[in-house]
Length: 207
Image (tube, rainbow, N blue to C red; front, side, top):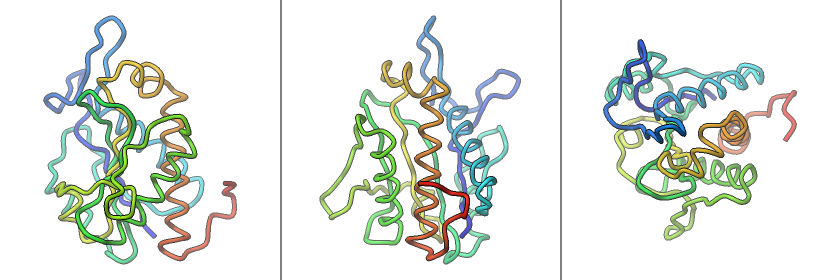
């Protein structure tokens, strides 16, 4: 199994943010750039996947905002039956909690997203998982470009809300909060390795 990691949006180059919007300035209380957060989470995932010897590819390692088409084209070079695509984001719009997204329809992505949702709930038992149970699983389904144009199963996680001050203060902008986000992603990846791709778990992994 190869994990294709996509840190959404651009980052900071010479202290200039590369993606219009996708930030929240809380003035004297701090500022969050979604692209910086996404990269911090993906970098943490990479560190642990390296430790567990799980193959991965960083689809967009650049700090510039790599286009969605480029991200998908890079991903589609990998075998569709031996990889899955994971896009990491943080949300905005005045809500709270986290979400797992897949493309519409009953696909292998649904099982993967359910595992991610379950691991989120283990890591954050007192936080809201925003579900859509209408089709029998917990993921939400949207026709996001990276979910519909990739050849392999694909999941997009939205990790809390940048414009919710409590979630910004206690989770998104803290080392401990980010570590918990990283941990649930990695625990989910290891379950996907075993339960979806039928591979053995890393010998050094303790659930």
